[in-house]
Length: 280
Image (cartoon, rainbow, N blue to C red; front, top):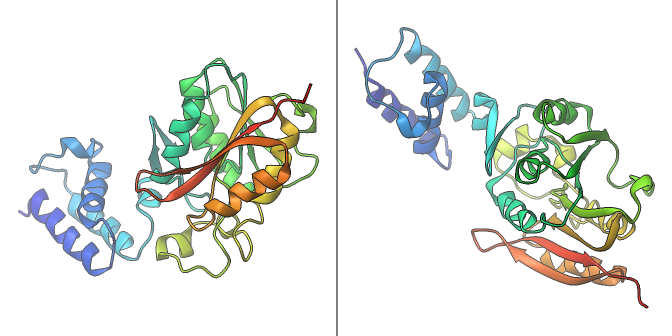
């Protein structure tokens, strides 16, 4: 009888041939998903009848570049796991740098807004860090909202269907928001993408005009209206657009302390800014 070690070795070889960037990790993640145990506790021993067939089916799907998270139905993000699937953007490890920054802004923050929420990974993770805060997750797309609502169920996060670029967005909260976080669409049109992204992430969550700033620009404008004096915003951007995003905040005139920040790989990843206080 074939053992788990051999099955995983075969899977690694298959995924390597298919061009998957992390074949060993993905092969083990698929095995742990089917076995119902953490990857760190995999035991290369017995498994139930039918496991090899089902495992090979999942490996074949991954080799076709279906995202690992679509096959397992979830994605890890910071301290949480969120449900994901076709129709919603899969949260990336790079965005955890934005989350880490935001947690440092929570002590005195009472109203937090996540724009372009998708899976609501940021909102849910921040609600775990600050349960007393009022947190709103804003998402426009109906398919993505399925996951926004599913992931926020049982949490204090409020879900609102709205367009983050609307001039009237959350008008009732003008000048009352303490923290805004956003991982909006920011990929320049025509950029080359991995098959997992190009074929499976929703285009509405990816592309943002020729320069990649078509969604970021109106969010900067909205933030100037929504944030209380001293309130903060952190917004993710394409790694080619750090300077461009900073320029949007500076040109707006309502922000100071504009800082370009990097992800764990050292790439420009998000910009933070503070809403100016009124001049005496």
